[in-house]
Image 1 (cartoon, one colour):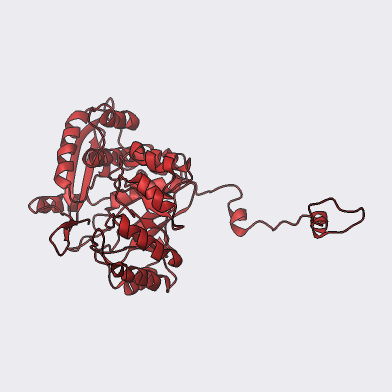
Image 2: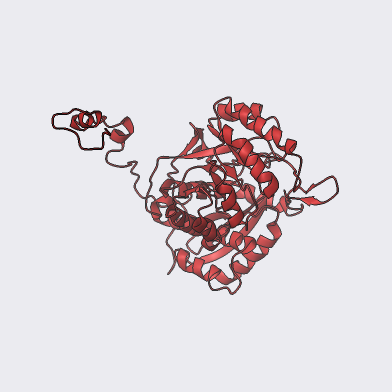
Length: 441
């Protein structure tokens, strides 16, 4: 007789005994007690020192400038009639000059606008242009948008996350890079990252791979992941769009038993249906989005349910305004947000502002000591307060300063930009196969 069938009167069954027991509940956890009344770190509004209020409307845009600085970053500076300076970042790796041209076109159009009306300016720059979107225009727009949020926070004396609804966390998880463009020495580099306070890292899955290559070309990838995990680090694998379908599905299957944190760009952007096919074959979380620039670009991936983590790049995807909207849209599909950010301090600070006020944020990329940062230039080079980016237990603490919460060394930026202007801007490496054909980088 089944426990679900009617029982004779007086009979005792396991199901009946269980249902008769008094319910027992565990006491609240330490974190539940700590945050019983929400998150508290009250700081009164304190306008930035530059937030003067002279003239009829001190918030009108007076000047927009851009500065290309090494290793490969493009900073944007906006100054208001009242003297408030906001900084943004419109870095588009390998396409600096095209973004600079777009920025100068925007600067001409926005002079005299009220910097506090961010949504109006965003709509004007994006929606009122017949040709819109794309990497160049959106990166230029991003630099402007981030700088405007920096200005607004400084004028009102609060961090950007306060303007976006307030904080939902006290720290933001981050990860660092190991291995370089042609991954090697990952175990030793992972040990260094662990000593620096990281608990998560990311590395390129492969170097140059043919459209249909030898399966043995994938063996070292699995070995590298196993080595990194052997010291207790979680690791994401960036396929970088280097693998086409025949190789990508093989590598994903090989990695599955080793449980990477996620695989990133397993296929090139523009293949949502093919990404869905791969998604249905594996249990590893799939992440992508650095080469998607608007909510409309992300929409087919969300609607197909073929990704677990969206990775908008705040310096390419319309800045804080559009990245926030992409994040809200993603939440409706149970998709997390992990901003792509192998960039400079302004982009990273903007990502953290999103992180602190966004429920479905999961982790952010951090370029400190990344392989692209060469020549003595790194994440902290142009900052006056690098301590705000300290990594502890795999996370960065709440940014409390007004605006983006970081102070830039303008004198150094101007000096470096003048020198960098005499040099060729950074361009990405070129991968070719043994037959001379171009491969994906």
